[in-house]
Image (cartoon, rainbow, N blue to C red; front, side, top):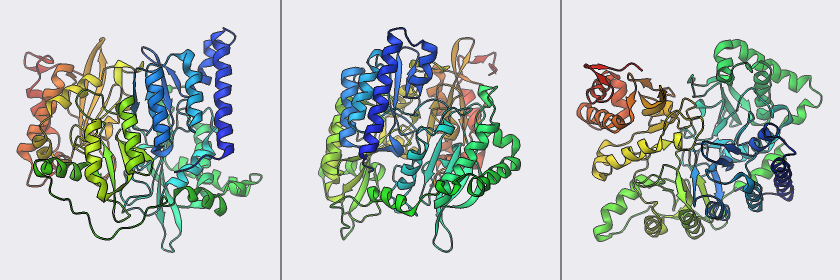
Length: 571
């Protein structure tokens, strides 16, 4: 993990002190709410439906046990005893009073954390593969580059007020586990025929009202030049991106509208930075700087490859439960003798991605005992232990069971992504959490879940798509119709992973459904798959083979509230 330097610490503490001054002036009436709003947003503080929401940055998803304990303390002492982990690998609180926000900022700074640029029209938290640095299929570890990008983009004076928020994802593995083509900029680390490291660059991806898959703009940018190339992209976006229409302000709209003209403008800007700008070459990443940062991401002390493969023992009546957990929640590792372990945050009684302070404390203890004090926040709203010795897996399983993290459902239907929705978010049209809870309760039979197999279910409470519904094999979108909550269903979406295939948005199967119909609709879709699949065929492949027609027919057959004289109510 990257360790803060004294400069880093002074920077974050100064930012916390600056925020305290701004907050106190606002509370005294010396700084109006309109003037204070962009200042608090730049530090991750929103005003939501019921209370302020704080978004805490977890750069590329890496957390230390010390940091997680501090997050647990904040949940316990300032919130309602829980926190929420998001698809951008961040942490959110939903109930911290604004007058206590400066205290929280100072507590975060104590453990090298903050909320800087987790909101606002700027470059947001840079995300990556939760298995970065440990995946067997990794070509290049993306974390050093993600850290360089983080430092470069933090409070970048030219990009503090872009037309809209801006998101970057990076992967260094053969399989894309970071959904890079659903981002404003997606970066894939590659090596050319000479063995040189560079980036394949994608631009213009995004979900929301208009889902667009990012297009490849450059097949190989040498790693030394990647900051210059990203700067060229963002400069062109900053110059020409629409500021007159909130819904058309994202870079995806500009790229879609201009096409090759946009690409040409970026490449010309790239040339000018290097050849015309004063000290343009100073934007290149020096080898010594990459080496300095990369030194933080070497194998942790004490990690040594171990001979032999993992052979689980015999555990009596616990054999099947342990074997299921091993298959679903335990992942291959590039270091022999080690595995990565996912702690599932998807279970009955808690919203997807939620953890209590006690559970965070338990996860921190597990990290100290079994994972060298390190955890990851995953793109799928779970936690991951990256450095577990195979010899410790049985003990880890027991510890995970005690903390409520051991549901063997990773990659299955109940391992769903869901945003907080209308229960918290002021932008949401409908609630997500009650729908997530109803589906989770409906599919509690592990034998049934395992028979259904791999499936991505993603749910958003509004068109902003924080739950990534467009990329779900099954997507659920909350919509508002005359003040009522309705839900649109999509099928066949993909995040670009090996399971899902080529990145694409799901297709709407028809008019929206009422809230109480959604669990029946999901069950009807699943039953259709189980009846129509060929041997060994996964859900996403069945959908692509058959098309959406049979699933639409099955879904419409269970309409009740949305059926009028045998006809579906229009969306």
